[in-house]
Amino acid sequence: MWKEKLKGRKVILASASPRRQNFLKELNIPFEVRLKEIEEIFPTNLKGAEITDYLAALKAQPFLDELASNELLITSDTIVWLDNKAIGKPKNKQEAMGMLQQLSGKMHEVITSFCISYQGKKIIKNQTTKVYFGHLTHKEIQYYIDHYQPYDKAGSYGIQEWIGYIGIEKIEGSFYNVMGFPVKIFYESLLGILAD
Image 1 (cartoon, rainbow, N blue to C red):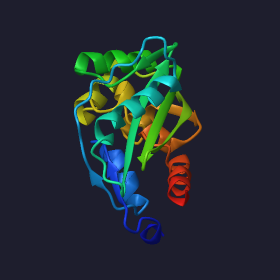
Image 2: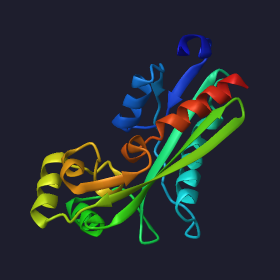
Image 3: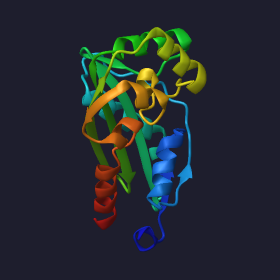
Image 4: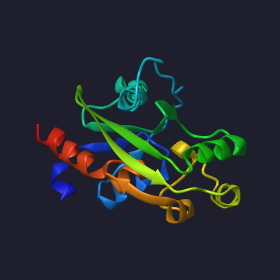
């Protein structure tokens, strides 16, 4: 399906996330990964999806001047939103423990934004999913961190991993969004920008 749509175009994914890379593969979208170091700092007055929208656009910025006219750039950002605060990725085991203890027995929101940049046009969209964790014991948290090393994940967990199986009671919204990419709205947006 993408063969005709992407004829003469090149998709660039600016993300080291193996999950985002896998989503594009599963959508049968040929792409190239390009990475640039960026400090993920956002204005303190931003809340919820404003943060991920801002960071998804910020991640695109260093690439824009060097994109060829046939290159389409995808950037994305995910946060966990709990008690009116953003939780990002843990820097170490102690932070990971603290994050999972905070999430235990509570509902939090996972917010993911993506930015598609192509020929001077930009689409930024986001999706929010509510995730309800049951109570996690100290041993369960310890086991998960020791065996799954969740340091590249917002909130220090992957819903598709062991902790998701034993800890999550229910979700409201997109499962894939919690994994780090709102696939359906991305698919629709990509079709839209290619049709323009």
